[in-house]
Image (cartoon, rainbow, N blue to C red; front, side, top):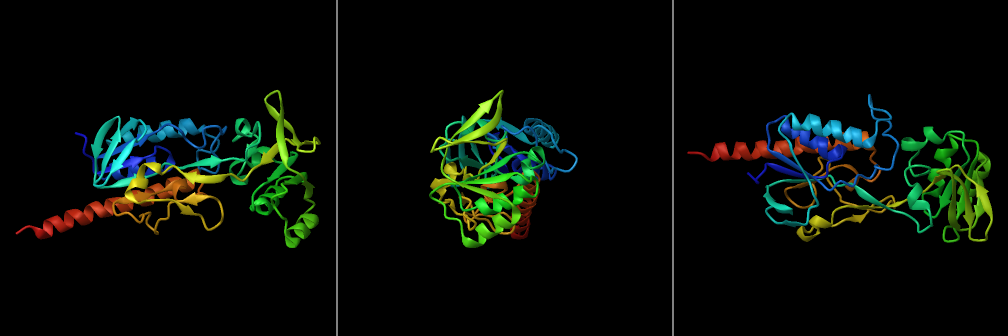
Length: 305
């Protein structure tokens, strides 16, 4: 009873979409979820057609409910070991010939007091995810990452009041400086020392020199790291993302990784994927895994005397 056609690590949008596609083909599927969704602090999921603004936990609940209608099973546990073959330890031991990695990423934030507490609320990273909610406000851009110019011009489309707080470790190119000047984006040089919060809302930031600056939202470029430690022993290791976003698990156009029998979908392979994008990738991977099962069945049938 502990053997499955497919085991999926991660019960977010990508994992649930893959599970649903496979369940609808009558595959035996187990989704193992560690219960640490990246978007848990967010007030809502956005740009998800028909579900805009839905609480992330509610989206997951609905997804689980629908996948379960097709026989998908769920286990709320952490994966502690994965052995070739594949044998998976997560409280009990389960076996499968196919794994889907949909575990997402962790956001490694700059070490600034108070930043982690505001993450996903008024310390944000993605203008598509949070931009509408901070439109026309006083927006600061935390200049600790090479993506600072990209973030600044994106948020400038949503507010006339945008300031980059440039960390001494980051050098602004002449082209970016000219662009900022043309777009009315101010630049303040100095490291951010802390965030100032009043009545559970960001009101300002304090720099290392003690100066305080009014800010209602702070855009931060995190460094993303895939939650993939459980498969490192199989030789599946993260590599640097080409856009400098952190690391990721590379996949081909169908979500297959470099290790036979393992596919990946969502932020674990594509750090820039939003929730709806992750769901689409999960569906694609579910179809790819199903094709692999069909190919095995075809080969078995042809081998019969």
